[in-house]
Length: 328
Image 1 (cartoon, rainbow, N blue to C red):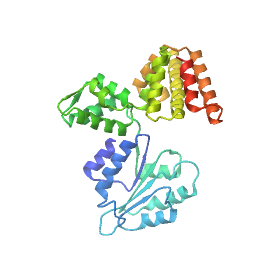
Image 2: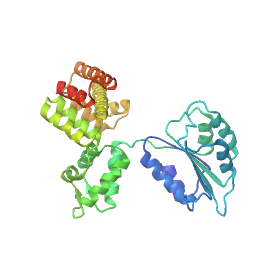
Image 3: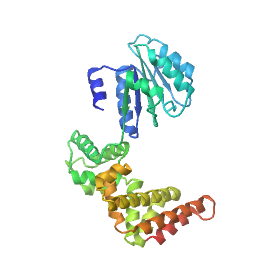
Image 4: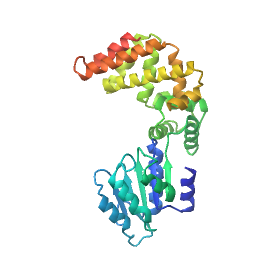
């Protein structure tokens, strides 16, 4: 990120870029910043080309790369999610050969989900261009980012309140940004963001709702668990998605519990299973109410219900209710 910021600040850019990673908000933000610097009008096809899986043609891509800009300093080409960096691809091999001598006036930006760092195309861009990995931010970095966003609007938030905000809205930066905008509008007359205003105005993520549901189940609060489930159904959450999220949550609790029993601390567990520390913290808390055997049994029953739903042996809404009733 620091290198990209430096390039934007100095207005010095490479001919080849590869953007990849899970955090699409950051990826899109930096892509837009670079395009704003290099392209006069991205709505015009004069000096800007965009290829994705719907229109990718390797020969047309070659032509675009080798075409000089028209009354401009740069020609920019974006190649978005066409799977050129994973597995064997004749197109990727051809492309690696062709872009080894790219015109100085051309900039090509590749965007991908999955990459293989052993591929010829990756190695070429890593050597002659710039590879940017947009990974999920850590809990502390997210809290800093939230504080900075609010500071620009004349608002403040305590660290504990920011952590509460993340447990409510999740860690997707695009969603965080949207919820922050709502909070700022809601707190026009207030300089301090409070937990009360977060609870009042912010939309709970499905992950947050599942956390609350599993907590109720673990504490044997059946009435509350059923009420939370019905609220999700009323909010038009599909039962199948709720079951999927329950399976995921039981797995995370089990993984966290087993790693904790091996002596790993919260931060080490977070690194091991690639989760934010505050999510691991909640998983460990929920795991106190469930034994390893109980969690394994719950996972087995969830997978059995999932099979019965998919084979038409039980209604999806009723199937999830069966799990909730049994484990609360």
